[in-house]
Length: 349
Ligand code: 6MZ
Image (cartoon, rainbow, N blue to C red):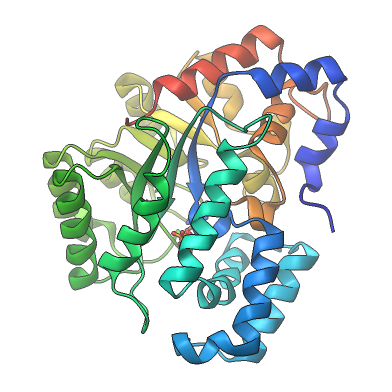
């Protein structure tokens, strides 16, 4: 069981030691990482062992122990996805393991440490995102307070929290998430942004307008998962762009009209190469939409999305830029340095 495998691992393996040192020391920010998708595999295993031996009674999880066991086994083996919709079925098992404050704190600490600690940290700044989840053992408020307490162990400016709202949420859940995010920011806690995520085909995005207005008024940066699948309509994409996001997640299937808006407004595109390849929304690196943004010298940020299922790391994602074709995009060190700088400039903090 390796922590890194797949296309990014192959790219990283192909680099010379000097190139790896270059990537290790390159200043960069990770701006698109989902907490529950970024738990290190070793910590997931420990949480699963504890949960299955006694913890499940504490959380009254909505899924059975057998379902959790099967889900964790799949994650340990490195899931193979036929398409992007398979991806969302991975989360009920993970959620069962992070449904008490103690387990959530442990998972958060491990995620932060993976990105920021050790001899060669993955990045110098991190904006970690998560969807506040109420469970029998904690409210959404406690969820966010727990994650923030871990984030605030780091020096100011190093890590910020992006509160995610899920496309599947209804009005009262959305209102609760927004009110909490704004109140915590108002109280000086390190909430820096609002994200829209979840199953790309769920929900009616026309209904979400008031939440982005509220978030902007509170000074939060806005990032949206947008046009992640071919089935996302142009109408929906234009509606989401009208909410005035600062950054966009994936933005894989934008048409010319949408691209013109993105270029004009200089909205940074959060690019998740392995995620797109493994979810099969992009067939190969040489057909990836990153190329058009590189050509236009448009702001992008290289991100991991979910290192747990995608078995990647931020350094490995940058290796996909630097490695020679066909393993990577064959960019020069200067081009990669510029991309690292763009990620730092696109922070909400
Ligand atoms: C859309 C994604 C995602 O919030 O519980 N999530 N949503 N597209 C993606 N890319 C393939 N990757 C993760 O982290 C897990 C949640 O993040 C969203 C999903 O809603 C998932 O349940 P948190 O910390």
